[in-house]
Amino acid sequence: MFNSLTGEVSHAIGTTLRLNTGGVEWQLEASGGTVAEMARAGRRRVRVFVYLHHREDAMTLYGFATEAERAVFLELIKISGIGPKQAIRILSGTSLDSFVSMLESGNLDGLSTIPGLGKKTAQKIVLALQGKLVSASDREQSEGAEDGGGANAELVVALSEMGFDRKAAREAIERAMGELEQQGLDNAAREQEAFRRAIIALS
Image (cartoon, rainbow, N blue to C red; front, side):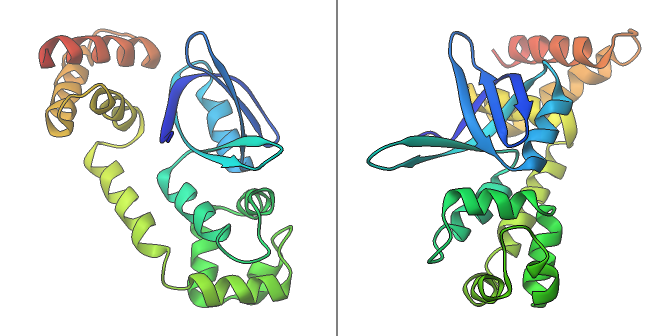
């Protein structure tokens, strides 16, 4: 089963995301927030968490900027009457933090303002998911902070996917970034060179 794809964003409009992983271009359905985040990344390599929805007549790949967003999506589609497309609409209608906050506080009026989510469905979601989503979100934020956040976190993830120890990868990236700080490189060039140096150091 797919867990994630890493590559360059070739298209990010609406709720459609295309990712070029080198010889294969994947088309994914994603929330508006994920698509906007990937559009901001430009041609930089990104990691997209995925979920493959298989029906008799079609297969659709869904993409997520974070594991927390995917976890919420997977919980939503477990609820009777909510399918993947509606779950994406719900996630597109508000930020993940706002959604979890409204869910935990039982804010039915707030939830009901999200496109594709009426009051009855909002009640059903609160009953099914209240108390279940906080731990996954907190865990991901903790891991992101541990890896330094931003570009550092993405580079550490890429190295760990290559089989390197996560802690060693984090230390190698931090060391390389420190060495390159005074060389006047732009962000993309510094990340690329830090990634190259980290691979050499870890090998």
